[in-house]
Length: 167
Image 1 (cartoon, rainbow, N blue to C red):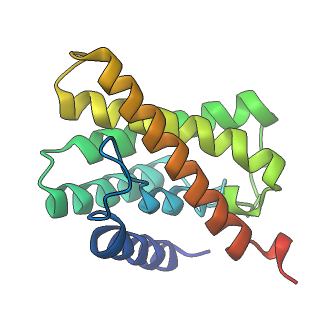
Image 2 (tube, rainbow, N blue to C red):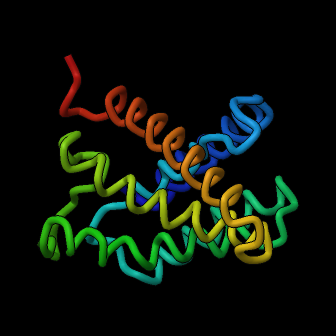
């Protein structure tokens, strides 16, 4: 998958996120963040610098739309930096020439990996937005609710778009 296609998918996800999902009052504690799907379609063999640039661009676009002062950029970069370590911890090292993506994994492998990456992203995002860990219980509940709703949405997207589950 080339970089332009990944950027196009990321922009489409951000567009849907910003226009449809962001203003839905799902809960008072948080909404799902669909734009994280862009991280799951990046091939394993993509260079680190390219991956970091993509994360920076995705986070910057979300920050400019939500006027969140860099919180999304920091969270996206943290999630992308943690992604290879989480992959290696859960599933071992990937082949260098592999064109696989997280979206090509089976559901049993996709769920734990996406849950951890989303949890890392949301923990950083909401901590930066809150300026720390004040009101820890409300922050924890917001992280938990948003993580569960995001992982649920990403799982639905995974089931709908993955070639593995196509009829």
